[in-house]
Structures are given as structure tokens and as C-alpha cells.
Image (cartoon, rainbow, N blue to C red; front, side, top):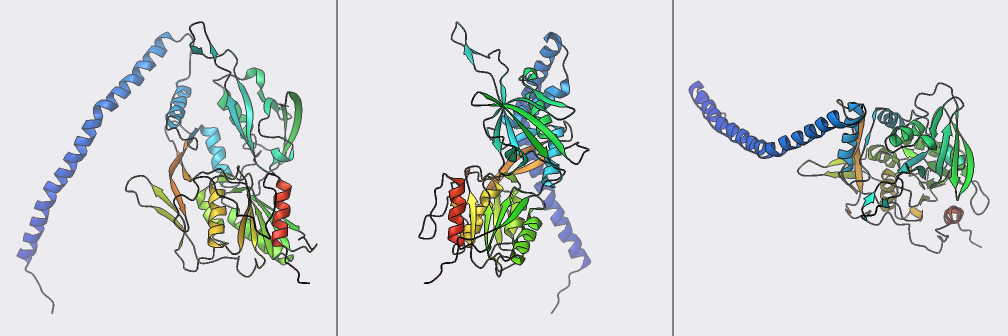
Length: 439
């Protein structure tokens, strides 16, 4: 039986609700105002401090300067002040290159650079003062099978000169503390504005006090994976080897294509090589994982990001579709090392946890990054910031999954190799995936 109320009663109820809502609204506004006012003095003091510095520099600095450059350095310093090695500011050119890499559109050298300032010296008062030496640019990391790796560049190489056929990108004599970032950007982003389908970049560098040269051939595009059929220990071409360079937008489709193509060629076991893989995003790694995970129900979480405070966690879920079952019948080995980082660590760990009977990890412990980075454009100063926004919890719910890095699977009767030899790791993977023959 339905009940009805009179128009008068409805109006009375509405007035009561308004009467209650108004004081609640004022209470919320008062609390918000109190919060802002409590922080207002601190914010005003910060603004006055910055304006004071600006005034002193404008009136006393001995030469002219570009305020836009100063603001960019302030933004960079703000992010550096967070004390998180995975958060950084990218100037406009580097930011655009980063976005292009995510879309798989930018030709990539496959290396990271680091500026090492000149040594600190002490004066007569035993106080540390900057040395007159400007410092050096060194290669911090080289991605495996990248153009830089194939050209022979290695981590620790000290750059002396970098040039294309028509342009000098870097010369050690021009390096200062103030232009190190722009010089690194010029080298790393050489492929952004290229017109020719192929660019050659000549590197002159020091290694063990020996002056060496390398010619890096930069292609017109960068594939996120490479594939090759390999013979098992019995000499049969049944193993599909896939090198995953990064987790970008096209990685899932590239991985799908590679696995299906090698299945058609006779592969029933696979090696996924993640050694040296660090670039990309968690979202794209989860998309690639979705091809191989055994989750049976749509909506099951592959990984979850936990944010600060009361913000709701974000989960990357399965669509209950995978190509592992029916294709990978003899197992899978994932190769890892200390340069496997970020999204690649999640990929390796989650796959091994989800398929413990079918997937083993071979190599050395990974970097140990359990945070996820978001990227945010800056409309006022240009460029953008890469910021650690949360911690990752993979399938299985273990929050401590990456404290000491992702660990290789323990040795067994079928899994034996030398972890300090890349060749031995690969041979150990092949022997593990080779079917045993009964005599």
C-alpha cells in the first residue's frame, strides 16, 4: 500500500532540510577557512622570501639573466627537494620526448646520462667550496639491445664529444654546471626532430682512461619487443625468445604478435628477457600482463596502486583473456637482473606468482622499486613532472613484494646456471625448457 503526503508536509520537510543544510555548509566553510588561515602566514612568508631573493638578484647580480630559466630551476629544485630519486622535472623538450616515447613514436638511443659535478675541495678554513672543474657527463645506464648497446657504449663511459653529421650536440669544453641539463637533453632527444629516416650519432668517450669512439645508428622507429626462434637442448626449434625493451602503449600488441608468430613457427616454450628493462608505465605493463595471466573472472586485479591519505586505490584489472593457455605448453622463463626496474619488476613478479608451476625467474635480483610514477604537465612553466604517486601491490596482495628486489627462482634439478654470466643464464633457461626424454 502506497502512502502519500500533502503538499504542505512536503514543503515543511524541504524547509527542515534547508535549515539543517545551511549551518552544516557554514560549518564546513568555517573549518576550511580555519585551515587556510592557519597556513596563510607560512605561505605569505614563503612568497616574501622568494620576492626578496628576486629583488637582490635583480639589483646586484653582475650580468643579465633569463627569469624563465630561473623559474624552471626552481621547479626542478622543488621536486628534487622531495628526496625521491624517481621524481623529476622535465623541461619542455624533454617532456615532449617523454610523451613521444610512451606512444612509441620517438627514436631512442637507449641510454641514461648523469652529470657528475667537479670534486669538492677545501680552503684554508677547512670549509668545502666548489672546485673550478665543471664536472663530466657519464653514461649511467644502457638498455640491453638498444642502439647504444649495439654500438658498444657501456655504463660508466665518460663523454668527450657527441655529434651528428651536421650538428655538435656536446663537447666537454663547453660543459658547465648551468648547461648540463640542456646538453643532456640535446643528446637524449636527438631523435625528436629528425627528418631523415636514419640518423648516425658519433660518440667520443673515455673508458679506463682510453679514448674510444662509437657510431650509434638511430632508426626511424623503436619497436618495444624483438623476437627470435631458438633451439632447445635437443636441437629442436621449439623455444621463442622475446626481448621486451620497454612497456609503452604498443607493448601488449607487439607481445601478442610475437607470441602468436612464434607459435606458428613451432614454439611451445618461451623466454621473456627483461634484463635492463626499466622504461614505461605500470598501465602498459598491466596490459601486457593481461595476455599471460590465468585470471578467470573479469575484474580481478592484476595490480593495485595505493595512494596517500584517503584517496581510493586504483586497480588494473583482467578482462579474462589470455594467450598463455594453449600456446605455452612447455613453460616460460623470465630473465631479470639488477637493471630490471619499475613496471618490468611488476611484470616479472606478478607472472611468477600467478603461474608458479609454469613460470620461473632466472638471473639476479631486480632494482627494488615499489612505487609507481605519474606524469603531469605544467601549463605555466612548460614541461612537466614525473612524480611518485603511490605504492604498488601486485596480485596476491603482498605489500613487501619488492623490498629487496624481485628474487630469482631457487635452483632445482632442471634449473642450474651461473647468475653472474648472461650467457649462462640464457643456457640455463634453455635447458630448463627442454623436454626430458625417457630412455
